[in-house]
Length: 132
Image 1 (tube, rainbow, N blue to C red):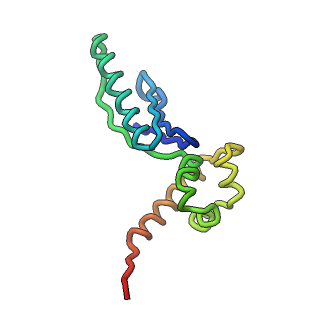
Image 2 (image 1 turned 30 degrees about the vertical axis):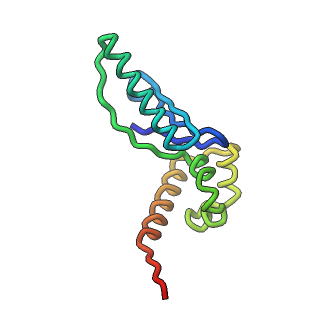
Image 3 (image 1 turned 60 degrees about the vertical axis):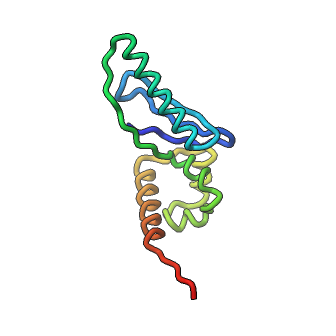
């Protein structure tokens, strides 16, 4: 299951739509961690309700990920649009449209963005710094 993290100005939310299971879930918080914890608490509560009603349920595991606008907003403190353009090949104007919601990235763009960010993260992780 994928819980999507949406970054807002003051509140973060994690959302799972009822695509593969008979219920949706959401959680909110002042931080991403709080939103994830609230989401997991909602999941525990829905399992309790289902058990009380004699309904069967399957234990789920969640993978949390960002949508592109939320990723861009959340990491704006560290990654400029110019830098992200160099990393992803997606021009700054288009990235800005994603942040503002005036445009929504397609599936191919999301995959390109994801692969580029992961590649950059691997490059950073392999980098080492020495003191002279």
